[in-house]
Length: 261
Ligand code: ADP
Ligand code: MG
Image (cartoon, rainbow, N blue to C red):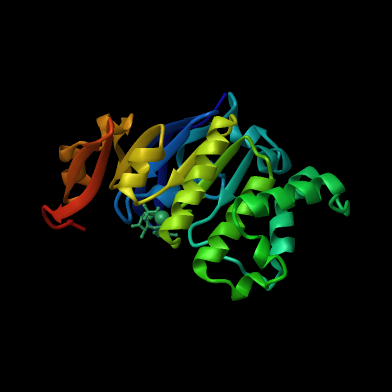
């Protein structure tokens, strides 16, 4: 069972943004989508969610074209936490998180005791219980990111796509969110996340997909993807690497060139 992008081409305002991109998110795996700013990561996520229509290629959800699934079925199967956790309405945190249960409810049906239980559990998991009555528009970027992750978790979707879910978090909450995402993958969900932190990507992700200028430069296990050559080509950086107690670590260290736009 997988969520797949097959040969996706997206052109926006006459610019080729995705040029034949393919990736696969199997259930039970945490896949990290990495690459420099502007590489096309968010556009790829939006295409996978059906929020951008590719000119060519297909999105395949558990063996069937995404377009063959109804919107409600899609929302049950795939949850999404957008980049920057944007929120447009001044709703309280409990209400925002409960919106994640909507795909499972009939029109006008209220959340049940079971839904309330899932919401409570997700708030404990994401350390957001103390924010329960706050208006989401008054939260810090990091607090909002944790709330939007809780909303994605309560939907209990098979696949979770999160766009830079740890970008605005302090180190404690970065590790906490990565632990949650890894646990979700171990529980059998397919998890696709965009991230810039290469050391956390290396430490937590089962597989990485490295995008560069609208194409996949490399994919596979972390050793295959995070090579000096790939880091130089995609990011124009060198990384420092070391080993400790049998684990390998990597930290961006030096600029090796200038990006060309
Ligand atoms: P990433 O998430 O990897 O930083 P994005 O997918 O957001 O990159 O954007 C990839 C490229 O597509 C960027 O050059 C961006 O400016 C461009 N782009 C994104 N959305 C639009 C749009 N609606 N219209 C025109 N260009 C866009
Ligand atoms: Mg982005």
